[in-house]
Length: 378
Image 1 (cartoon, rainbow, N blue to C red):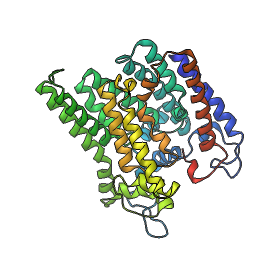
Image 2 (tube, rainbow, N blue to C red):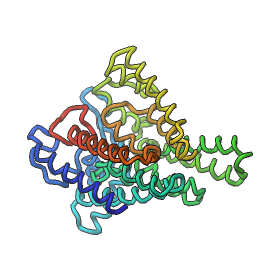
Image 3 (cartoon, helix red, strand yellow):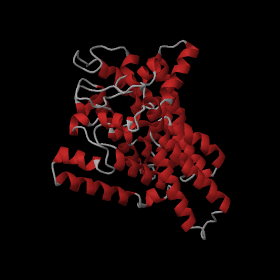
Image 4 (cartoon, one colour):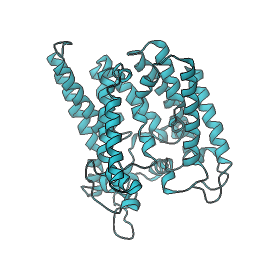
């Protein structure tokens, strides 16, 4: 396990180093950046900025008077955790961020194995971790992003849910919800879990105590999902501070609009493909994902991972505007690696690894490479 994850990260580091040599003065990082500041590009700069100055109490405005991009779009756990490590070790913040992400990525791989092992045999669980480690999105686990920390916490939360360790789930859920936006999605997953367990109580008992605890956990996660928008409201005096901040990132594409649930995907695909073709594409994506949830390999993962996949996909569909960074937002759907890991054909497994590596390096080139364009945001 250690060698697999370490080998994957060595390959990614080599690819990063080679990509950095191709950067031009017009690239996001400029020409010939040092490795650690290079790994703190894009959102990493925002986390670094939060560590340095915190969050604004007055929302910045653009020339037209609308809320501009600012720190409230980013949760506080990761940047402040990195800052604590940097203070204790004396390390430069980007170096500390690199180490935190790298170590949490490794911890996530170990946790994913333990999670998969509850539903799959050892060989399948191990190959699931191989796919997780080399996936097209995995290079983000060694960048100054919160994804590695959040993925570890999510894998731990799902593991605790499968083991029904309710007491531990409360603090894990709280930290997870303030690392990446996930509290509302996890609350929805727990609600679906509660309904499924209630409906199937004749096949598997669902004691009254578990009903109250799991229901209370769903409410608790929902409250934590609203905690950051409420914190932004209290700090700035603007009820819509958080949503206005999030909407600032999509304004260059569709203008300044209010958040209408489930509209962003139709707006985005209408922009990319025109209407009605874009809307048809959205319908096909939704239908295809619904079918995936009922495939035998996915059903084998169990109700806990399936309700998470359904809930998180619903959350993304409701609030996020699809663009290149949407690929990164798919990382919490890592349980699908457990479904992809089940075939035992050697040719299939070699092919899956090679395809994953090629796609990873292609995404790395498109996002951290010499291209600087709105669609190149990781």
